[in-house]
Amino acid sequence: MSKNVFVFIEQRDNKIQKVGIELLGIARQLADKLGQDVVGMLVGENVKGETGVLFKHGADKVIVVEDPMLKEYVTEPYAKAIYEVIKANDPEIVLYGATSIGRDLAPRLAARIHTGLTADCTKLEIDEETNNLLMTRPAFGGNLMATIVCEDFRPQMATVRPGVMQSVNVDKTDGEVIEQQVAFTDADMNVTIREIAKHDNKKKDITEAKILVSGGRGLGGPEGFDELQKLADVLGAEVSSSRAAVDSGWIEKDRQVGQTGKTVRPELYFAFGISGAIQHLAGMEDSDLIIAVNKVEDAPIYDVADLGVVGDLNAVVPKLTELIKKEKA
Ligand code: FAD
Image (cartoon, rainbow, N blue to C red; front, side, top):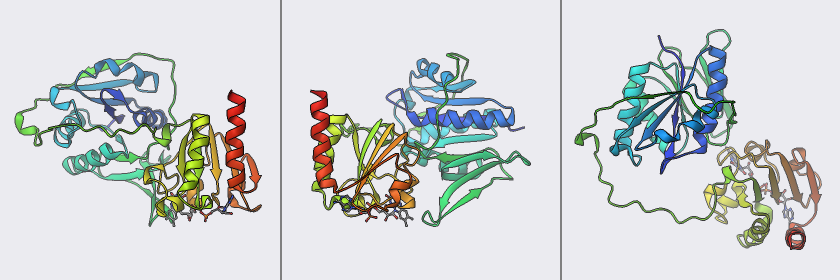
């Protein structure tokens, strides 16, 4: 009988990625409802030493698959490793991050195992009556939320957007580590990695930032972001944006906050020249403290802001940067 909530733990260069920790948080809630265990699946080369953090964040057990072929993420060997783990353990639920790796891996596994997959979920719950997993995600371009159920096949599988789920801390630093052997052959590696070219990006992912300085159409042009960058620099913050600014080509898409961008939950979120459309709020309203600056009094952004400044951002941003600079000197 299918049992337990499994989480694919993403690692890069043997560093556990935040999304895996977040998934353990929701897996813990789901498993507690079902009276089952949370099992992390950690795949790579020499990754066994990284399991402690997984127990601390909610895993009961960790299944480790190690092989030199798994050093870097390559679809085929990773799919084989996870397929073997799923086949041997018959999980009830399997969760993956909706990252470039998770989005590549999960559909391949769904086809191989012959089960369903709900992509890009923003909410997961257990149905009180049937114990099925209720997987909710935006549908029709984000205009409605659809809840999807996989009644007839197991495991029930979902990819989950990074930044949406909350991690948990449990008072535990170790647990059962199971090493699963998977027999790889040369035929499993169907690509040759000639070089790994790392993107030289000093910028942090906006989902990881403690402070975000976000700008919208009210900035008036790409140069508005230069001013925001100066403020971000004095605050040790990252710059993010609304979709309007991304669509105008003023800033890269990976900086977009919102329903079709990233979900963020920083300690402090500044919204400069952002009206507060529902699709933007969906990505930032859970921030700890929101400060909005808009030139009109009735902008919807004030509905979620803890502090609102009515004024011209062209005057507020440089002044704020100077004040903080002075304060820090
Ligand atoms: P606007 O709505 O044009 O607001 C600009 C604001 O700047 C105004 O409130 C104005 O008063 C203020 N302003 C202007 N000049 C100044 C000044 N000098 N000083 C101070 N304030 C000033 N949007 C997202 O952000 N993220 C998403 O992920 C997203 N996904 C979407 C998905 C779908 C399916 C759809 C239909 C839309 C989506 N949108 C998303 C778009 C969203 O509906 C809004 O169009 C967008 O958020 C508006 O961006 P904005 O607030 O920067 O621009």
